[in-house]
Length: 543
Image (cartoon, rainbow, N blue to C red; front, side, top):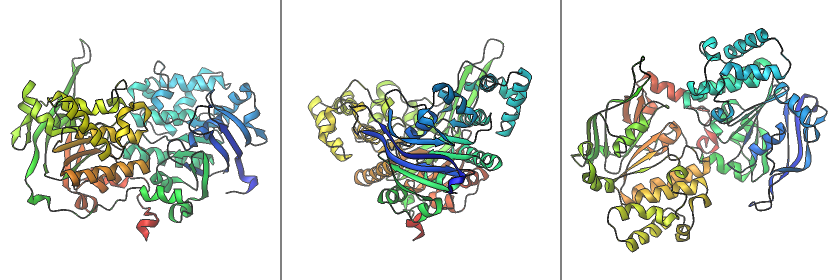
């Protein structure tokens, strides 16, 4: 794999400078590694490690604020850092292609899928429209999209996330490149869609003998597809080696910490929650979204929740798991009354809060709070953090000084310190903002916390810290939680019970250990089988 004659790409002592005001001098510093024919190299690291900057440097797509100051990127005999823009345009797509993390922003929303792929083929010299259309159909079939002729005429917004990512893969493969760079292509996908896309990339790579540079922060993905691994931290490579060696015998302290932070698939020992009183109960909850499809086409209905029933007992964490569109977020929003259900009961301490309106909801708001998936979008960017946290108590009539004192105390409780209260949300990292979101949710001293994908956007080590914090707060404050997630590794670590949702219905419900060890429903088995790197246990678990 590393024989010099087999090399497709060689990055040698690459350094890329950051702007003068940045927190460190270099985005990447003196990094070196090779990519060989027929190899999948996973470049792993947390946000800010420099892995995406490395990919952008290879493609000649660095933003204007980032400048390569030394090193080489050799593709054959050519140094990519010294090529003219016209030569780079010929290489991009034709010899080296890239799949981006978010296909919706990479695809033109105003162009049909087929036209976007055809446009690239035309730019690279395929002049005949008939030949281009035939090639587009061939590519859409190769990436296993349903009904390729219909897909050609569809717009990106009409496709699912997994389908859009398959379109991006088709575009990347259109000119049979020697190298495919995939920048976090499965991060935003559900577990089954992620498994399909990983399997597709791996199959296409083997079929075409491409070299693949796969950028990720997910060691489950690494265990699933990698031949070799390069681990990056703060712009430097800290470890490079064969995948099995790095995964099972990591040498660098940083690699060891990352792998140790990966949630395992063995649930903790079940606690006897059945002996405790229920704090919350959903009974036959239903919610249907209705929208008009035009005068002649009538109404469109989407069943988000159908006959949903579950119980959360004092101190218990119930996991609500399922793919996008399963209805789990709608159920969470119904529980906190951000969305009105169509029918059913929502019993908090025996009272049906689904029937409450207006001021009658205020006491319930104190007891049921929510932690949102995107803390940045849910925090007011114009207000300092302490005032954001104090807003809830102030709305409930708590005097200003008492509300502010409580806000500073909560910042200490979530590990940020009192000084964080005088700063704005944009001055914090993603993990720190999520801690602020947790502090805000706790400001009213609730008894039930609804956490909607609270760690899905976080790096693995930050994710572990936030999960540990939630568990610590649950025990310290005797909280109950409804924990919504699509990540079954996370669910295994934090949930006492699990309810599996599919198309608005709960298809399996029980203690986490029992569901994981002996799933009864075919959909649950499908979700568990799709977990990337499921067979990899890691050095800590193997020991």
